[in-house]
Image (cartoon, rainbow, N blue to C red):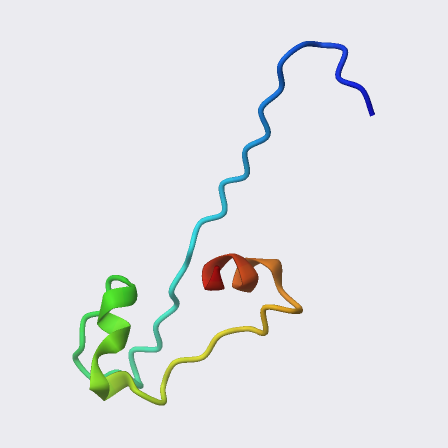
Length: 61
């Protein structure tokens, strides 16, 4: 493949999303990854297999 149109910048913007099941976390406010360190949510966090889902791989790296 040859770029004949000049400079080209590839940019992929993959956002990270945290889905929260409010039935499992009581009254804890989760607004980012830092809140997932709270001991109350230990054992209640799940993530897709990064070898099967690209978005999961992006969040792990």
